[in-house]
Length: 520
Image (cartoon, rainbow, N blue to C red; front, side, top):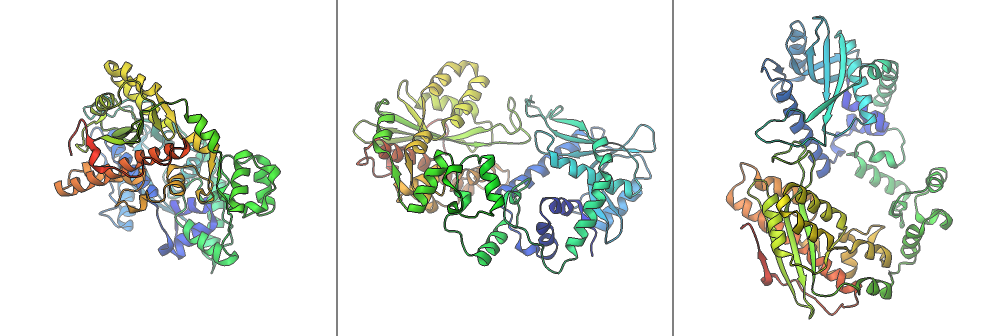
């Protein structure tokens, strides 16, 4: 039986079945694009932390890409005899039936010359509760391997920090001392190890129902396997309870647990709010619900012509451009459709794949494109509004014009939510769920490579990467352009449907599409 790694012990803390699958059925693992992006972010922050904690360049980095595990452990043992800072120090404690393996991000000699200070680096912007499990395990592995720890700190990102530019990242990471929390939980860690090793020794996975733990505190990479297994055992659920939207009341949550409710039919109507009840009623009946008069009346106050706006953004844990914060959503693209009184549409857009900060160019192009008084529709205007606010704060000379654009935003999402529901939405009012029920000919699945915001971010990162060829960059440019243009034309179609003007527009006029600000 192998010594468990810290990551596998944390998997046990989330779900014993996940641990068993990690060890015995690793081929069933399916990491989502979001999970892979999180891994990449973690590596980026880890690389920066090594630079920040090794300003004298006297530390030793035990690179797992070039060392075997045994070499990493052996080299750590040798380095602990000296007084050098160690990055990725490895510890293995205990035996095959009660041991644990852990890798420390940063290990620094303490001032007394006999002990060490450990720092665990996280790419989040706060100390999460489950990080304390992590550090308790780190403390256990190191101390059981004979390393005396003077302190253990969590380093995380200060989200309020603004990058001054010039490669100066001092202040990006802040620390919190968790030594006592980690030290006081050593009995718990020993208990986790005993239980986890028992799970690994089982011939078959432990029973565990699908639930909230499948996504908390991490998205489980075996969730798809467990859902398939669940459906094979119990049969598919026709009206899954997961389709109930919004926050669940305490009474509803307790009912679901007490009766192992899997279908919306298993839930009394009295436990549902108005939105949840509508979803249940229309889904079970298999009928669309649409308050045509209410929707049309809600839109009647906004005169034509009208604009329809959508941003694509990128967020870096480690900011690349001066004046930006960690994880700040920076728009690199916008799409803007104009719907004229007679039903004609035109399109203008901006896309910057240069790799430089697109912010000011985008802001100026937006001001140039938005006119002066037309209503500007967005789908969840809070997102676009927040981005415009940030641009206004960064560029004071453009503030008045940008705030004028922000003040003209009108949100289509509440109109859809209040006046429309189709069973095919499965409890969601995202534009990609609503659009196929209204205009099925506008199909995101027909787009190549970029079909959602996450894929748009990945396309952007590839396009601005140093090794991207001109041909590949042009290809990604075209795919991003088509994707964002469809987002705003989708809003045009939703507006026409809700406003009772379904006779126009009925096609995406590619010929009328033009760029402003930055070329391809």
